[in-house]
Image (cartoon, rainbow, N blue to C red; front, top):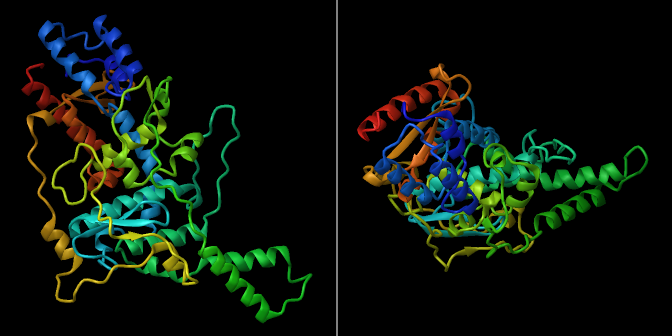
Length: 443
């Protein structure tokens, strides 16, 4: 740990040497000049370090980038918490797991949301149903948070400040339908589903443009009009967005370092929100360019917090899309049915009554994490955020020692604990860093 310095950490963090040619060339120049890891002077050690740097295929994180990215996920935490009755006990993951009823689920299959209105399934256990349902709630909240709570993306330079929108009942309604479709149930979810926002929206529209103090209504005709508008609104079919593959690298400079962590900027949010689905996140292949796109940033952030594991797998999957059952495609088909059917598609048959509960199957099927391999060891590089003499302000840049260590992530079960136990995590990180550096013989 004593052989690292602040400049090295600040230079490495948020770089992605394997994907960005610009990042790699800048790091190469500084490394050859001896400005990176200046306290490590042995030729063999320096050669070993440099051999590992070009293999890093994800954004190099640090405690600074961790806390910035928590700002990105903070609105999602608030939105998911709104589905759970108070008081909150335990982690957010534990609380949402307790809301899992297994309704609308087929044993051995995991529901996957391809677009806002198109669903599919892939093989997976009851544990996968909970885990990937939880992740898809996060992604929905990330796509729609400006219309759900009073927060908005960051202002772009020389552009007007984004306006904070009022919470949209239709978006909350769709969120409740998604939670129900993924097998979660609570009093809040049931209440959101019961309050049909399409009728409220239609009624408010008619009253706004034809104020009752100025116009007289035929009440029966008015209600029929409200019903007709609500059915039409609910039956709208989303444009087909499948097979759209956003680029992850570009031939130009791409996303600058200050935009590679933290909250969405307005332009990035408007571009990325159509792609924040599991199918798209796992489908992007690793390529090389001069710079990276904002979607690469968001994809890297997702994998850093949730990992790369696919449904049905007990270990991290390096690449690829979730395996699909092509015979089941729950595309929206409207025949004048309720908005719930229009949004969620037909539900699969319920599990037989003799089966154990979904929560019991999840606990039984939960895979044990594989033991860490030598390729998953990490070199933790400390930095001082403000004062080099203040240990409470140390940062840790996680520099994987191989491409395989890209799989190391912050498990979502501990995600919300990060908000509440920051100091404890910093202390443990320093202890872990010291042990690893000692074992590597670089103390």
